[in-house]
Amino acid sequence: MTRARMPRPHEVAAARRDPRLLRALRDRRSDDAWRTRGTCQSVDPETFFPAPNEPADSAVALCRSCDVQGSCLAWALEVGDTHGVWGGTTPRERRAMLVAWRGEVGSDPAAADDAGPPVRDRLLTLVPLS
Image (cartoon, rainbow, N blue to C red; front, side, top):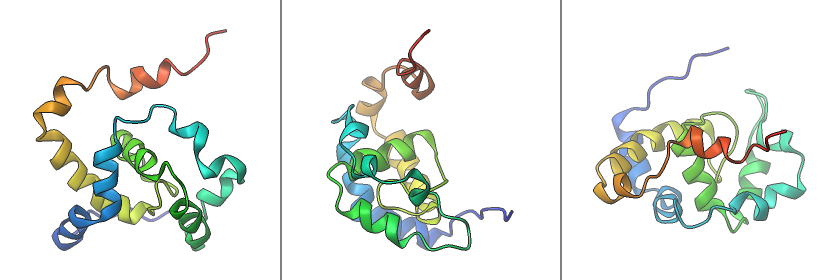
């Protein structure tokens, strides 16, 4: 297993201008039920987690046609997920976006006001208690 490297400054600068990241910033709190409407619901989940030596092109292509791409990417960046394809981005792309995301969301005073409970607590509310 290879160790992921930190993104270089020019990669972070490019990520800040990436339309997918800008859409994720815009959509980050607008759609709580995005998972139920994703194009990925009708596809084998393994498609979105290719082996390291396999291309992720088919998963990225599916994501491009998805209506909830921004919310999906926002979720992955919020929880720091760097595996698989989320919101039409590869793990390498998301590592650079994650640095930009933390800079944008961390400096946004409005985000701190309406952040609500930590992500872990919000995810636990989705787990049915038996």
